[in-house]
Image 1 (cartoon, rainbow, N blue to C red):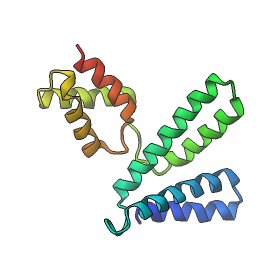
Image 2: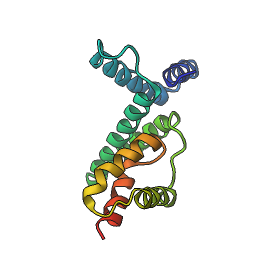
Image 3: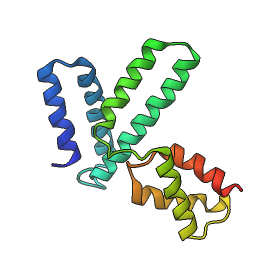
Image 4: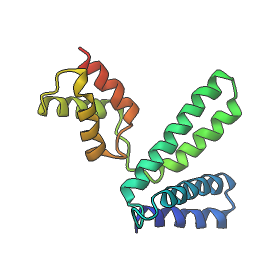
Length: 151
């Protein structure tokens, strides 16, 4: 069962359970997938699981950015809504590596490829995107890479 089918299945279950928060979030995911399919019409028949993972990660990033803005505006109600959406979206992502595991991965790739300066960051990010899509938070990778390569 591919990722799109899993999302559809979870959507149907949420409708049966009348879980409005899940329904709304899954509807949002489904519409994002549909938008992406429409944008790629003619170029690609279907979105791959990899494309959907990338899309889900961007949805989570949007939610995290919103949470930051809501924290500045002191809007606890909206922060909770965004956090619950993140929880639902994360159900479809592979287990995320924690910051220590991510740091290990980044340092290993830097060592293996002899990256020495911040100029190599693009190559590093490309390798991580290719090999660890959905498994690491790219914002955390960026921070770690800047610290490590910026020395």
